[in-house]
Image (cartoon, rainbow over all chains, first blue to last red):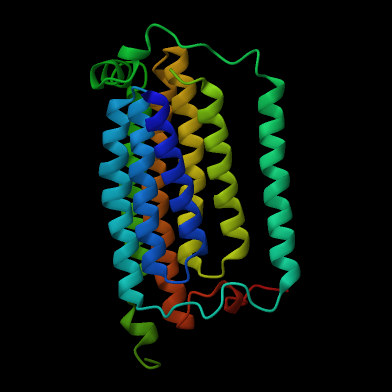
Length: 173
Length: 100
């Protein structure tokens, strides 16, 4: 049963990833990415990481993708006319590089196949909110607080970059 | 249960899709979404190792990487908005102020 669910989710993930890259409409690309995030959350559930599956849907498919869609619709972009334009060499070399990267990763995976871990008996309990919170609020408390500062700094920085400066652009716009 | 190899192979395929997307697309927002896809592929690797070892530390790392991804998305989209305001386009071939 697990195998069928995994194959279904893997096909959904790869298909929506390809759909995102190959779609000319930016809004459709973003919606394909939402589908991709949700199916990756399903794979996290298969791996018994319940908390991170929840966070994946809330943060990625919820917050970040809403931000993306908001910006796309704010900018009101046209579709790209043709995905594969005149410059052929760029696409051929990109495809070649992709094949090389994939085969390199899979080859190195094959090389360490004996060292990969088997299923551990603690897998059931490792991904629960309780287990994560236990470690997060004791061993990694300082890093957790730093994350809060990082997010605050990011919001302030984004405001500084994106705000409309009337004094500079008032004459030209 | 499924062997861990399949999760790692899926993650490799997703990473490659993101990489090729970054290389072939010209729309800055789509390039940004491809970077998010690559981040997700690496998160999948971390979670599969963490689950198969029964060790929660890998999932903590994914938690922090999610926070960094959120911060990165906010800053990146602000930069894209600023570029759009100057160029009226998010086509990266038209952003050539610093190009030699």
